[in-house]
Image (cartoon, rainbow, N blue to C red):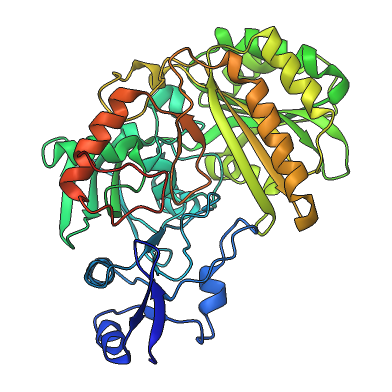
Length: 465
């Protein structure tokens, strides 16, 4: 390889000699790509079409040894580092300009122990990869609502999903993680080893190292009662109010989202997405009031495999579009919040842009506030505003619309929420509030495992001191 110009952690330019690059290349089993390589452009492309950055080097890691070599090379040469998992990467932290991109997306091995009901998955897996292996044994864990989502970003940010009201967040089902820290060491963190690191990564994102493997607890899951109920937008206020009242007493076996979206034919609608983990007869009885609360444009709810349920959202979130997302928790889904959501959606500037209300509670709220680094477990709902559009000329308009709606919903947020926000790395992570105790705890762990802040391309936590 020829000499390369690159960017340091301080933002200054530096030169990497051909000798140093060839030595680095000899230490990795995967591909080491530069701007002149044929696969470079595809390797730097992610789900969000707004992100167009050009790393000096991309390491497509084939295993943990490649990750260790990449982290060591970056630390030795003081390079800016970006880490890519396997999923959406909507915030864009997975790619950097001028630095070293550590790409785990080819590390997709999953090993299931059907007797212990556990699975160990590499950090480049998507939930589609993971579920494909676990469902062979009729097992699953809380894992997002879409197959292309990366397990790493979702889990490190907490991890919502259809099963969370029964089994907790994705991070609540972690048994251990393998982490390559800034000094190039591979550590296994769990409740009994490096417990401080294990606490921090469950909610703290990619601040503390490169997580190369996740070990999860699994549960028997095969067929559910689920799918879509689609209502006319003219009944949006009534449907949202009924959904709020319905979910206040819904069993923990029911996971659900209530959305404002535009259908493929251009029709704006209310779309309720349901997943009931119980008998078909019980599901039909439970969901009958939702079917009858307003006229339906379509009823697509019935028995379906778990992986079919996980595939539904992909139709609303195609790759390559321009994306800008904001999210927060809600104390409750008040009449005032419903009015803000529905009325603002009448001015939606792009048809792919949609708004999601996600029902929380259940097992999510039973985990102690200090057990993980995830805050606001007592919130009943989460809202997500997904700005998606095709034309660069629409950037300011759509981003402004998302920010305006997010701001209008702030009076409904939990009282402890602050203006400081964080987003999980390596996935289409959702913005969520941080409270000071979490910041202090994270900063102390950061000082132990990444004192120079090598892993800074994220919603960054500065080391204590």
